[in-house]
Amino acid sequence: MKKKILIIGGSGFLGFHLCKLCVNKGLQTFSVSTKKPRKDRKIKKVKYILCDISKKDNVEKKLNYNFNYVVNLGGEVDHTNKTKTYKSHFLGCKNLAEFFSGKNLKLFIQVGSAAENASIKSPQSETLNGKPKTPYGRAKLAASKFLFKKKIKDNLNFVIFRLYQIYGPHQDINRFIPILIDSCLKKQIFKCSNGNQLRDFLYIDDLTSVFFKALNNRDIIHKIINVGTAKPKKLKDIIASVIKIFNSVEPKYGVVKLRKDEAKVIYPKTNSIKRLLKWEPKTSFDVGLTKTINYYKSIK
Image (cartoon, rainbow, N blue to C red):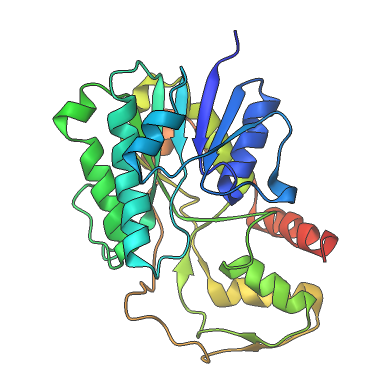
């Protein structure tokens, strides 16, 4: 019998790629989201369930299947709405953890964020004593802390993967790299900050390989693990690389001011993921960027 995996947020950028990998690997794959997947992210063999995980009754009524694995990629994308951000990222995790506690899941993967430790000097280690700067970071850290409460920890096999910047095909044009590529395709001036921020970028296929590799690994249970390359890049260097490829527009540095809560340097220590999962990223930034650019060119 095929093993069953439930992917919360399966219609989003990360979820779509994970659903695709799980189907290809022969898992019976279920996706949960509040909306139907858009056309380019719909996969034939995936069962789509509409459910709001921030509502406990929704979770209890709609997710009563015998799953082997659950991956929580869900949550509000627009973090300016503080209430929705809290409900989806904290209450959503809480409701899922309480519902699946004691149900003999092989693994519950909670997707955390670098935002949980935004005020901690990089390279950042994995800790519950985080210092978030934003409502999103606070909601994610609260979710992490909740999972370590004794009543949950004793009855749920979970791991927390803290993600840094992920990029690749099918990402919405509301993140740095897709916005930059879109500006070049439209031959529009790219308005940006001074570009001196250091960020860690991981290609989407490398991320999904982490999730899949984790499914039957007992060593990672009840651990927090950073997921990234540990090789940060300056945003202005990425801007220069993309603009050089297109040779069509010029950046306008310093037009966009840094947010007060924006950290200038964010990247992880990756000792844990190397040791526990024997994992390292396989896709160089140049290769990943080329694949991403080719995708956006194809849909123009």
